[in-house]
Amino acid sequence: MKSSINALFIVLNGMLRSYINVTKTRTFVCYLGVSLV
Image (cartoon, rainbow, N blue to C red; front, side):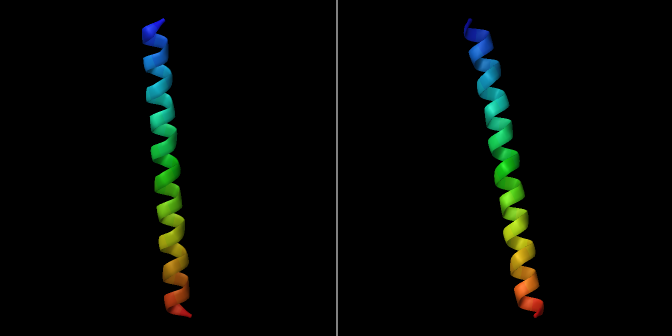
């Protein structure tokens, strides 16, 4: 039981990390777009 909870936590952590990366990238792209205008 503990191993499945651990695996779930790892998956959630990975999803959260990729979501943060996407958000950072989007913010960076928007910032670049505003700077160029």
